[in-house]
Structures are given as structure tokens and as C-alpha cells.
Length: 362
Image (cartoon, one colour):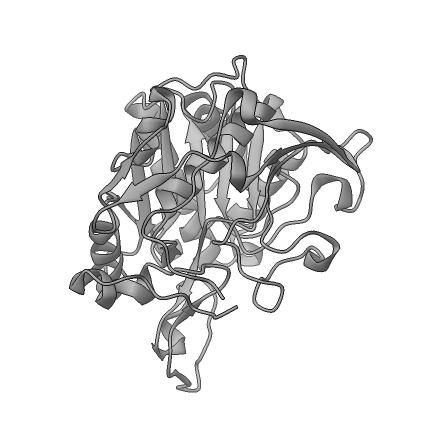
């Protein structure tokens, strides 16, 4: 059984990381090696026994310079829910207004794009994300996390990302030691933190000649669901229960949440706008990482940390890109895949100052 923990486990760094042989090159994080954290009310955690370089992950922007949310202005329902969720978990958001495809003139559509085949809604989604990415470039931001407007995350998101950061540095960083400005390392372009699902690079077809098979393994992560409840593209029972991986990006689906460094934003703005667009935004960004366009260095988490919340009510409100629930279907209870202590589903508990409740009992 999972016991809600307002004091989540955090990662050990440096000498406590153990190198092992695991089918591919792998580094393991073990809970017995961990420093421990204490949180007061959710959203205002107090880290203890952590290096100065990781403390910025506990700030309101999770160690990034900004967090952008892309969403249509008229979806006030999603904005209300996300504003409340973020305020209760100590996260500060900046909104980027979404764009409807029909608002984009033909002149502004990238050369080679067939807007009929792409769908107007996909075109609008692409433009909204591009506006967020362009803002990183225009404002010379060192990094920013971009998410969609129906996201959910665990109430322990800050300790989770403190576990993730050493893995990202291990894959792409000129220094193994974190710094306040670069808790995740100094050479990454994209951190893909939220997606619908992803295979490891060596499993994706068609296979690349030399896929990067390195993995940083977080063992016994109790914010990862049990075998009965975890979802995704890999065969979970081939691995120990409650395992999370940090790895080079393979081919994720959906751009639920991803961080860009400044140079990463420059590359994506060129590759997916100035130089052209050849498919839906999420597929195009996935190919950008898979084929390492312009030397792209992309890191993923499996299972991811951010996922689409399916709220209670009319299912037609789930997506502004694809049509669901057109027959008036109603969802009686909301849920979010792969998030044990869902922030969205614990709003009432957080308002009352009570312990978070897991979605599933082990």
C-alpha cells in the first residue's frame, strides 16, 4: 500500500550514484542513498541535506527561468483549474494565449506545409507553441518549461525533479556538479517531462545505427504507479516495480510538458518554423530529438512527470485539437494516468491542509 508522504524522498548526488551493468550503460539511484526532504503545507516544501546547486528546483519555476502554459483564452475552465493547482503546489505560471488555426493567414504558414492535411487545429497548436518558444528567444531566457493547459503533476513534483536532475546531468553536461543556474546541466536542449508515452531509443523503428542506450535509473520511486496501474509503451513487468528512467529521448508522443534551454529554443524555432513544418507539432518535435537535428540533445523521463488530466464532466472538453465526446458523454470522476498523488485530485485536501490521497491503493 502506498502511504502519502508530505516529506518525499529526494535524490543523492555525486559519489552516491552507483554505476552498474544493466543490459545497457545505466546508473542507478537507490532510495537508501537518498537525502530526505520535509514539506510543510504542499507547495512550500523545505529541502534539507541538498546541495546548493539543486535548491533552485524548489523555487516557483522548478529551476527554470519561467514556466509557460499554452492555452486558448476562452478555455477559462482550464485556466481556473491550473491556476488553483499551481498556487497550491508552489508553482508560478505565465500564460501564452493559444491560437486557432483559422486565424493564421496563408502567408504565415511555413513553406511546404499543407494546412488541409495538417488540420486547422494542429496548425493552431503549432503556432501557440511557437509563440512560447519565440518568447524564450526574444527575452533571452536561459530556460523555460512549456506545458499545455490541462496538465497535472504529483504534489511531490519538486522532489521528483530533484531526482531527475542528476540523470539529466549525467547524460548531457560538461560538469557532474549542479549549479544554481543549471541544476539540470549545461548542455541539454530539451527536457521532455510530459508525454503520452515513449519507447527507449533502441526500441524505436526504424532503428538508428547507434542509438544512445544510456539510462539513469530511479529505483523504488513510490510516485510511480504499481504494475496494475502504470501506463505506457514499454513492458513494465520486464523491470522492477516502481522504476523511473531518465534517458535520451526516443520518440515521444504528445508535447504535454517540455523544457527548452535558450540554445534549444533557437534550434526549434528554426527547425519547426523558419525552415519549415512537415507535420503536427508534437511529431515534428519528436523527430527533431530522435534524429538529433542541429545536434539536438534531448532527455526524457519514463514514465513522465506531467500528464493530461481527464476532468469530470463532459468529455467533449478534453481536447481543443481532436474531437472527443461529441455524443454528450459524461465522465463521472476525473483521473490522470501515472500520477499517484495527483495535484488536481488533491485540491480539496490541500485546501484543508490534509494529507494527499493516492489515486490507487497498492
